[in-house]
Image (tube, rainbow, N blue to C red):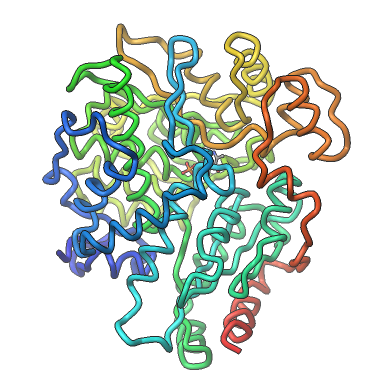
Length: 496
Ligand SMILES: *Cc1c(COP(=O)(O)O)cnc(C)c1O
């Protein structure tokens, strides 16, 4: 049961419940379990299953200290009628390939898949009768995580949530989604800096012992994370890889055991890591392709074996992939190095001190035998949106478009179906999408939505279109250095 330990050290083990509650290991590493290879899923059992049935099977294997009842209740609450499609993650044929639509949740981005579930798992970690303790979720967001986390945690018992986003670096729709969030236990604040600055500051806050004891004694609050480093976010994402395979079986495209490929628009390496987990658990995955935007640190790493964050940061039309430190890569390195915690600790030390590390040649070769990569600049993103609409009458968002471009350039392997993960509704980024389609793009994102709807005969998700008239609740903007004080104040106010 105590199957989880740090990527940097395996002396201390804990249950999945403890790992979810704590978020990140005390030594700065991420929680991993060595049980992945021993919990094999037979692909034959994936056909004819609802999303919820597959979820119960996969979560039951990975979170074995939750009871079947707890998981069933959690699944029912997380994947209910807040989803606009009862299939949760439908698989659509587009040309010769498939698109796995991950954006039918309440905030219209793929992070809902994990963040509708995480609060369920998190509130079930509260100590019995420990009504006096509160978990404060602390999150830095490059755009989509923040809203998805807010929607998941708003008014969840025993929890509070504070979200920091980089000022001016998220879209108008993304900002409005966050600052209009309802709930008595939520705080949203802009910070002056980019996403990596905010994310680093959040990591420093988690490591700050004085602040932690101050919060515990002063406000009865412990901090935890909703970023994709939390086990409770990662594990729910493993489910849709299995479910996609089941959909291909059900559509008669493959037979049990046939290989499939996935192409994944990638930032923090969480989404694609879940695909690697699925493969370790027995899913026949022939290739995983990392698609980056112009911030192509991952694509360079997979090509050269050198991870180097010392480079210019670009603010692009795919803000949720504008990331120079891909935290979850650490977990992939752990598994690919056969659990070499010493190596991981030393690579991460290099990253912290010099902003750079290089993996040994044999490790790089092993990684490259599974992971392919590519990237798209903004002109290519725009062309991909245009071409996909023109060729297939299928509308994609700028993140998905990075993947579309990369997949389009990639050599097809005979007969192996390719699945592109679509991570956001095109209506979340109406300005870029409208411009790419050659439409007039008015000043307001909402007028853009209407122009796209009219030109394509598609409809904007109601939750996005309605933002125009909702009341703004949060207008704070602070310096990075003031984040710890903001967190302390929020904890005290939520307590009051
Ligand atoms: C978060 C996000 C991504 C990147 O996912 P990672 O798990 O960080 O790799 C891609 N597209 C969208 C729309 C996102 O919100």
